[in-house]
Length: 263
Ligand code: PLP
Image (cartoon, rainbow, N blue to C red; front, side, top):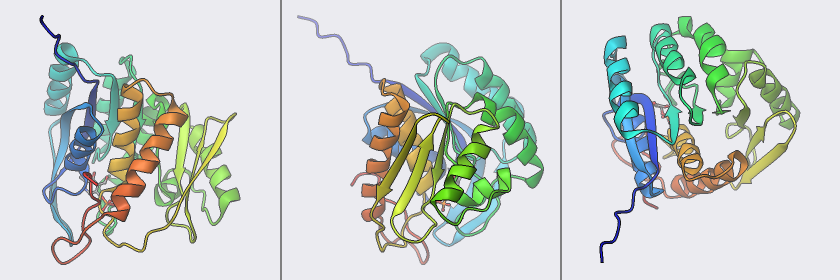
């Protein structure tokens, strides 16, 4: 008897490479493997990076990004997309234009600056993120620093997170996931579409090896959506996965080590 091959859901990450393997495309593909989906990648930029920070970054030509995307989408097809580091206004606009025609959920991680303070998005690209990219997002996943850069809202408590979510939703994503991990106390995130409100809490682990947390969370959300979960269910499952990955984060090099995707 022939057993038909199992075809896993397909998820595309549009993001930058982290040569150290902790964040970016590498974190995305490891997350997708761990969560049982087929991961594919459109590279937007290459970084020379390790546990100490980003030593160099080079963005790819717009045509190279467009060609990678067409190769994947026109033949293999995608059930969900995640965007990460997009580097420049022209890349943000190119990616937003491509995604506007896609019939699949899009998770936008509006990556701005690395944990070490290295810029991963030009300041001149913020308008394009607000006006072009966020409107095509099913879920936008800013941390508090990105909320500040995108909306000007400074968040100090859970009331501030509500204001931040409202401001982000004002740019057009269907859902906003505000990541409050930088506030004191438990790691609290707020997911809302303006009608429903879901507060997600996880214990704070005393572990500095958290490189790649944001990439991992957004990729896990996209993986859940590709499997057919609704947004709240996908975000809950992703938060659980990333919490385990943070708890198991390990030291590498002399700086901040990566979360463990295979925990
Ligand atoms: N490098 C790349 C290519 C990324 O996409 C990101 C985050 O999205 C980072 C580095 C930063 O990772 P972290 O802030 O977790 O150290």
